[in-house]
Image 1 (tube, rainbow, N blue to C red):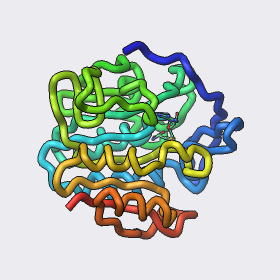
Image 2: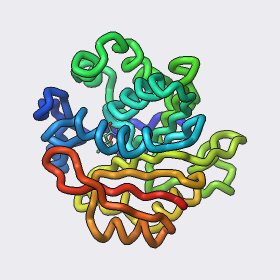
Image 3: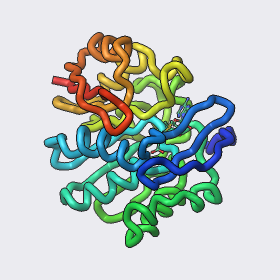
Amino acid sequence: METKQQSLSSEIELTADGSHTLFVPSMNEHYHSVNGAKTEAEHIYINYGLRESCASTLHVLEIGFGTGLNAFLTLIEAQKLQKKTIYTSLELYPLPLEKVQKLNYPDVIYPEFASLYYNLHRATWNEPCEITPDFSLLKVNIDFTHIPHPNESAKWSLGKSGNQFVSYDVVYFDAFAPEKQPEMWNQELFDAIYASMSHKGILTTYCAKGVIRRMLQSSGFTVERLPGPPGKREVLRAIKL
Ligand SMILES: C[S@@+](CC[C@H](N)C(=O)[O-])C[C@H]1O[C@@H](n2cnc3c(N)ncnc32)[C@H](O)[C@@H]1O
């Protein structure tokens, strides 16, 4: 697979907790909550997702690599939890390194691990890369709405990497909002994610809309509404029981 050249034009903005986000003028959409990007990511993906998984080795799937904020927080948290982590993240519009270098995440999160943040971004697309001995990253440059079927001969598909089959223990569903990109939030895609997850696998998302909750339930998940981060009343956690 070659890295696709598509790009989204975006502007850096400061959010309420002092961490950056990106704003996409053409979509009138932010990558994170303006009430705090770091706070939102920790609340929804780390606290409700990663920390709740009982898997001893964590297989994480992320929809939307973006700024790498979730990946960076996961790397640090997995180190604290002393869990080996295999992190797969899908992205159609990889950010240029020059833009990434202007984001303040290493400074406001873990300055001592700044080099690891940049290593996440320097990792070659579509190849597994060892970021630390306990954290490996596979960034897949793909259109999530056109993922190949696992039985097809594609090098990568949900639940399959090369010749290896994987079951995801934790899924960060972090696409742009359903009203901006409805094609990312459809029943077929949630069914495919469900099929690729392990028993007791956890999916979290910032979107608490009833229509999304019902789609997740139709896929087979048990879904709960949980208190959201600042500025968001509720978020969703879906578990494959
Ligand atoms: C809400 S942002 C994700 C933020 C990201 N998780 C982070 O920590 O910065 C949504 C992401 O989905 C990506 N995206 C948009 N359309 C996509 C598609 N069809 N397939 C895969 N990724 C897509 C965007 O480029 C963007 O990075």
